[in-house]
Image (cartoon, rainbow, N blue to C red; front, top):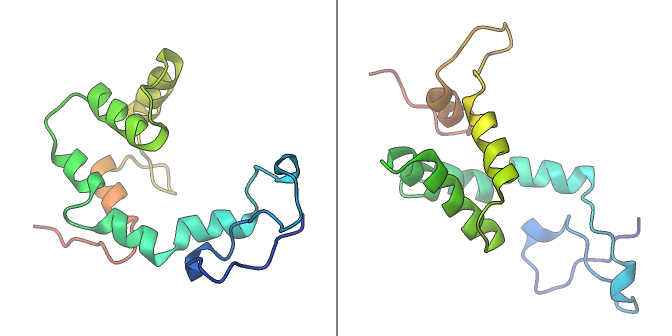
Length: 126
């Protein structure tokens, strides 16, 4: 896969994302991600910052009293501009219902584990 040089107007955080070559047809663009892109999206400080922000969507949804189905629908509307299909909603609900375990196989509190997995977002026990 040939990655075009970063365009000068792109933020540095987008340098790993493939751009269309100057003399390329739209059909030549590869739609899959590569390891550098995946690692960037997982580890990028701006992404982590948004996830850890006290007024961010993740925190608001965690405190929201709506049903899980309504929260999933909101996320689909934001991410895909559409409602989730029945099979997508079922898959999301199934994932959320799975027990969360640590590396030793012991059950852990899902909300606590999710918050603490974001670097810089550890909250001391109360």
